[in-house]
Length: 220
Image (cartoon, rainbow, N blue to C red; front, side, top):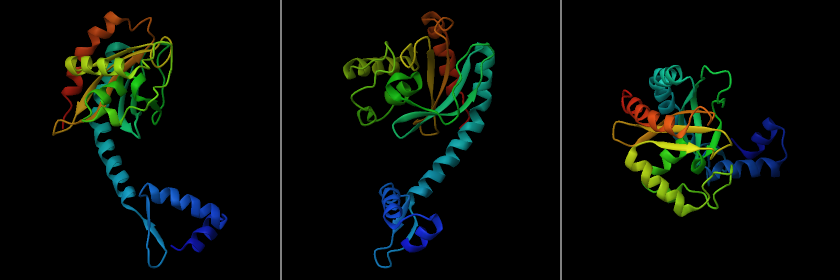
């Protein structure tokens, strides 16, 4: 489509439309033909569609896992993936307790302050590319020193699961483990989270190996 046609359809000024198109073009969502000046869908849209299909398959195969974890623990269980250097809730099974964690599918959280995010960082080929400095202080216990964070990631790699206590928010704790694809890469993360008063360090340490085993048993 030509710029003029797009302006008419959207009922926007030429300068506004051009600015929006430039932003989409920078993300490869659209492409501009250098000869005709017309716009068409770009490779980024195809990549996004492919990611959506992969995510849908993973969500379907792991739905029974997070439902069972929520039932066993009474806490909210989630399936999360990496999106734009953040962790995003792809699916969620609510806990049975009256007071429990309640996120929303599509909600995004910082990697360094969440158990799911730390799993992604710990098993990334180049975690430094995903760490956004300065590290945001989400709560009093948030790790904001990069050296300390890297030490934490090494421990997570060794034990195969991650634990956070009051790092994302006060009185919220979680434990998470990686979901691997057919070639061993981490496709997503399964977690259980809730009030720190129930999910004590002892309870989290108990749940860690169990969640790790459940996530590893995912059909591929």
